[in-house]
Image (cartoon, rainbow, N blue to C red):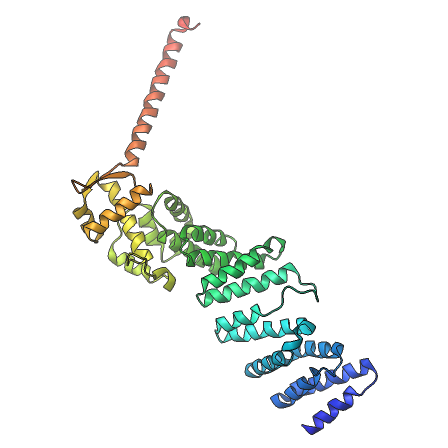
Length: 391
């Protein structure tokens, strides 16, 4: 160790700047090859001392950020934290070096699945600097990566904060890979926020844009799951139709329940239980009424399906059909009617729900159009038969 200190002091005393820099580089290379922590820390302590010329410290530290990646991961982490501790009061002077070290440190934490520490390491990278020019693409890259790491840690609120920052500059980025990563994070955040319809549409968009078949099919599966979990109603029905008509959907495990929902068939418990195995933890969270998101989606779907089968039904019969208490069935129906997601009326006295089948109205409309067309044909035939009456 004393010998190393002597070598470093001799190097510092050299007059020629170029020779001095090359000597430091040579020492660093040798220390990296030896793979010993103590000598490296001695070198870093000397290099970051205020008596060492700043231009040399910057140059050699930047080289260190590249060379030390060949060391074992535990040594990389120790060296990274040691350097950051040494220059914590001079970060402005070493912004580029700090950025490189923190980015590599984040990769190491990510490899350990320590998502939160990885995100915190990236957050500490100085992105608003007067000392260096930082491209919009680099900023977006960091913000998107932070958002993705927080999503892995199931911190959707934090993730949204950083994806919003990325959104401010994403239009300036030309790299498709970065744009797709941004779109993916947005879809996942919508999913976490239970904005399932928006999430479904974003996932479906990704299912046609992602480069790999496996990624596209996974995005399609996510789109279907989110559409199924959304509140029953016309908007969801349109989304389900789009997904059902996509031939790729037939290859997925979630297709059977998608088909039954699209065809407005009542779902059975065993089918719902199998589908629940495909859900993520946040998609199984309890709502304020004690039901899960899936429970709500299935109850509302089955209620809509019942409205196609019955002209009217009592609360007790509906509760039995939906396998929930009659009072709960009434509340669900009342809410859906008030939100215009179910066409019908509720008779509190008779404890009865009267459905107004939109399909019947459409059939009557079709018949009227058909009658009008026949009438027009008769008029045209009469004109052809008696042309003298035409003025």
